[in-house]
Amino acid sequence: CEVRVTAVPGRLFTGKITRTNEETSGGFDLGYVVLTDQAGTEFWIYNQNENLMGWRSDQAAPVIMSPDLICYLTTDGKVFSNADLAVAKDKEVAIIAAPSPGEMRADSIVQAFLDLYKTIGYAGPYVAFEPC
Image 1 (spheres, rainbow, N blue to C red):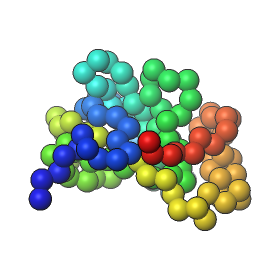
Image 2 (cartoon, one colour):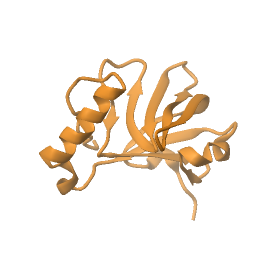
Image 3 (spheres, rainbow, N blue to C red):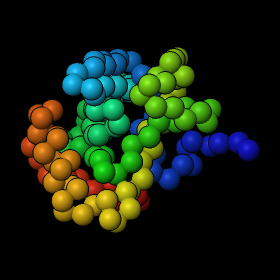
Image 4 (cartoon, rainbow, N blue to C red):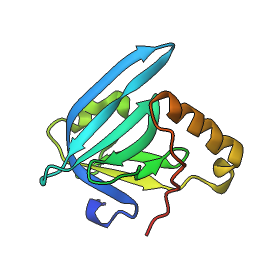
């Protein structure tokens, strides 16, 4: 079947991967992936093994935060993870999101993520993803 990424609910951004920074520390893969669209807007995804937070360069607050889901999909329909970034070399990539199930938004779980965000420099509130 044909995938039409422009019609994917929860599509947050489309661009090409322009920078990455990954390092291993304390048993975790830590880093970020930066995508840039044709207008020059950047979308930063911060990760610790999994994608934690997505932030657009033209907005003052995160667009998406874990425990909500932040996923990669090439515009020709290939899904991939941070371990597979080479899949997207020279391809357009869509960042898609989905709200986590309600039980994953329990106060204790959200607080655990907020504590983790402080270690990467974010001390703001949780921004729940709600698709349009």
